[in-house]
Length: 339
Image (cartoon, rainbow, N blue to C red; front, side, top):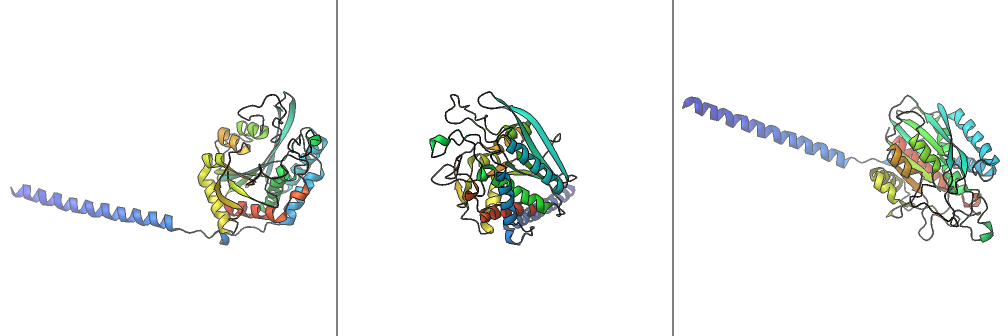
C-alpha cells in the first residue's frame, strides 16, 4: 500500500515535471516563432556596390551598335566576342556553350550561351540571367512592310544584359560568401512569327538557349538557391507585375523581391498584381534544372509587354537610364541581403 502511494506520488511529480517542460518548450518555440515573424529587414540599409546607370546604358548601346544580333549573323558573332572578352576580365571563370538548335521552320542554327561565374568555390550560389539575341522578325511592327525585318532589340534582350554586365563589373572587386553565376542565353527570341502555319502549343520553339542549358548544365550537378531572369527591363515607363509562372514555381522568391523593391521606394514599378503567364527562359530553368527562378519582365497594362515589342522601334530611344538603375539596385539588394 505504501509503496503504491509512493509510486503514485512519484508519477504525479514526474507528470508535473513533464508538463512544466512541455510548457517551457512551447514557450520557447512560440518565442522563437515570434522572433522570426517580427524580424524586420530594412532593405534600404543593405550595403551594395554603387550601380552606375551610365555604365549599364553604355553596355546596352554597345550591343545595339553591332546591329540585330540574329542567329549566325556578323552582328551576333561580334557581340558574342565582346561579351566573352569583357566577362573574362571581370569573372573568375567564363564557360561557353556552343550548340545547334532547330527553329520553328526546321532550319538548323548554331547558338552560344555565355556563363560567367564569380566566387567559384562557394557552394551557396545565385543565378542571374538574360538573353542576348534579338529577333529575326519585327512581326509586331505597326508597318506591315517591316514584319520580316530583324530588330535591334534594345529593350528586348540588350537591356537585361546591360544590367548584368554592370553587375559583373561591380562583382569583380566584391568579396562575398555566395557565388554568382550570370548566364546569357542565345536563341531566346526566335519563336514562330504570326504567319507561321504551325504554332507549337507548348511554345517550345522559343527559349532554345535556356532549354539547352537547363538540360546540359555548364558544370555537372550545378545548383543555385534561386534565379532571377531579366527581360525588357530598360523601358522608360517601367512596370513589372508578378508573372504567373514565376508565382507558380517560386512565389516566395518573387514576393521577397517585390518586398525589396517596395522598401526601396519602387512599389509603383514592382506592382502588387498577379498578371499574365509568360513563356520565357525561367520556365525551362524551373522545369529542367529545378532551380526556382522568377522572371522580372516588362508588363504594360494596355499592351503586351511594351509598345515597341517585336518592332523596329525597339531601339535605344526605348531605354531609360533610371529604369536600368532601379532594376540593378533591386537585384543587387536581393543578392547582398542574403549574405
